[in-house]
Length: 544
Ligand code: ADP
Image (cartoon, rainbow, N blue to C red; front, side):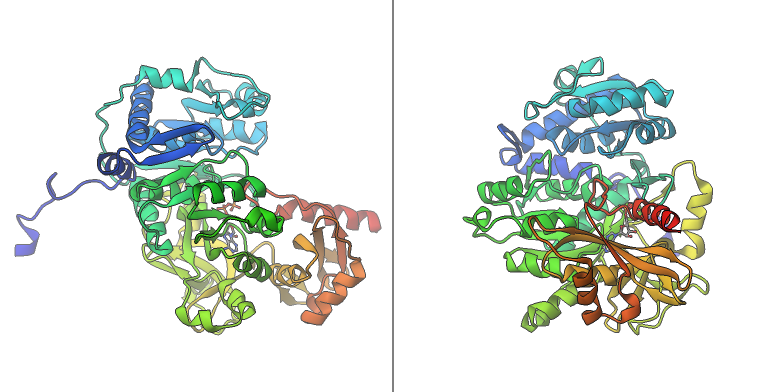
């Protein structure tokens, strides 16, 4: 077997894939280009590389080695970016904590993930103090005292980040992991589905996902990337590693605020950013004058929740090139893209938005994604009607859930990763998500897609955000109830909205009740439907 002998792997022809290698490359090739801008602070790729090596070296001195968990509770700052390189360069596993969680949830994660080190921004000191008191472990605490933050909060730890960096070696001889399957990140799911599960990803997958984003987005060299996606969320959809691979410039952002975002887009001529659909709802409704002076092409990704067609339309009208993506923490963030076809450009905006509202097709770097009947494990017919579960397989899928073999086994049953999202497959191979399995409303035996009802409500020009959930009903089993947040200064009655729905949808799908007021969201812009379901259950109980 000539091809099986004498042709082995050796250090000259094989290296473990790791996204940290993108940083070395950017620093070697473009040392003087700007890697980041954070208010008054700027960094070059040479500086960022040196800071990451210092961090890796300092962490190694604190005992971080292969598979040590290092938790971070950080905003989208340079330190958070550096953590994505420095921690894995020391062999550690980065555990990004969701900055909006409460102390109990964080304490659970610190304990379950067994974090030996915690890097925390002063802004979150209240929650973190309680979490540290409750977690039952004793991580070394490093404070980030960001000069761009002048709000309340105190230092909790023994050393400040900049002082820590000074203890590290800027030429630290870091090495790629011995095995590209080694863990790089631990990310707890946001808990919209109950107990958080610790998603573990590997160097190889992170490397491929970062490149997958570049290919899917057609990202050219030197992107100017605005950090509106929280970096704690699936490692910022792997975009931080992509920016290094393209020697771009990171524009850091502590808080998503449309006025600040539009100012930064104009000032720094931002070329790329991402965000949940709600970010775009706020952006498109910002006053026209904030758009003045933005005369360059801006590419953006939206995902994390289904974007209403009206939001896609409005974003296009604002001149942004919006691409719809879909994925989960378990797939390193986006792994499906609504790939645009040139012939769609000829279509009416409304029709184009409808096509773009579909979640789409797999990333090139993900081997498989389709809609499968979970009972038979067969692909559903591509008829745009038969509902099945979205499933993935390939290199952009997690290793599994930490210390949870049962959940891991269930998630990978039949050789596919089960997402829990219900969708249909269209004739052109594009998928359209109808609901998460637990969000679908079953009324009189008919399935109602809550997303479809929300999409229709969104078409009413005065609606800012909305969520539709099932309300228990004696006669129908369940009926839809809509929670609606109106645009500033707008007023609409319940009857008007229900009538609007009846004009655009089958009547059984229309909400039977509309509740006006703020819609509860997670920090990543996902609506917390379980909170709303609890609310309708308790009011239903009172009504009875
Ligand atoms: P969690 O499961 O804790 O909410 P994730 O961030 O992993 O955390 O969420 C992934 C889920 O978000 C998907 O399973 C899906 O339900 C939803 N989602 C993400 N992107 C989209 C999209 N483009 N359209 C519809 N739903 C989406």
